[in-house]
Amino acid sequence: MRIGIIGAGNIGCTLAKKFSAAGHGVMLANSRGPESIKELASNLGAVAVTVHDAVKDVDALIIAIPEDRIPQLPKGLLANIPPHFPVVDTGNYYPGVRDEVIPEIDAGLVESQWVELQLGCPVIKVFNNIMSVSLAEKGRVQGDPERIALPVSGDDSEAKQTMIQLVNDAGLMVWMQVVS
Ligand SMILES: NC(=O)c1ccc[n+]([C@@H]2O[C@H](COP(=O)([O-])OP(=O)(O)OC[C@H]3O[C@@H](n4cnc5c(N)ncnc54)[C@H](OP(=O)(O)O)[C@@H]3O)[C@@H](O)[C@H]2O)c1
Image 1 (cartoon, rainbow, N blue to C red):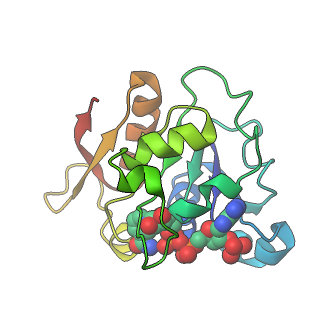
Image 2: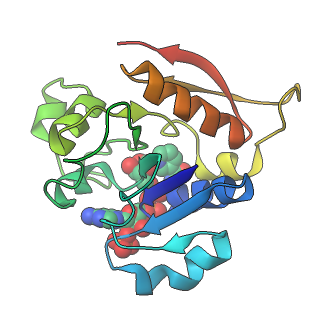
């Protein structure tokens, strides 16, 4: 697959390394532009691109930036994605610790639903509940009894199936598919 990753921090870089080691093409973007992560991306087996190019001609997009930065992504970024295209939200909301307060979430809106409203498309929630260090170090091959599991949550079965494959490629198994 060709995978776009927006966010070149702990989670984005760990996933870039895992997916490229599994044979996927990985396009990695951040907010400061490809020049700022050219060497980093190359060391991970990925290609540094702009945010717009991370969305072009890819089979899945992973958004791994702090939750409160989602509204800063370019407007209309995902306007032309095909049906069942997986857009992954790895984010967690940390109000007052890292993130600015998001009143809608504080009032009870589910985080991923708030992300969907910002992006204008459905999202799959995965890789949000494992620390990047565990993600990097605890992957095991299929059948290994030490393999750990992750939930994959979302409404689109086809998009979820793509992400289940990528969770498997990251050396983790799917514990359950959450249907909302
Ligand atoms: N760290 C973990 O173990 C972990 C585990 C599970 C889930 N998560 C969640 O995953 C998300 C990312 O966490 P992280 O620890 O990987 O963050 P991080 O290390 O702080 O990295 C954040 C990345 O996002 C980029 N970014 C910020 N705003 C952007 C924008 N508007 N457009 C494009 N790129 C932007 C930053 O690029 P610049 O440097 O160019 O700004 C940076 O590369 C968070 O919501 C976090 O809660 C983290």
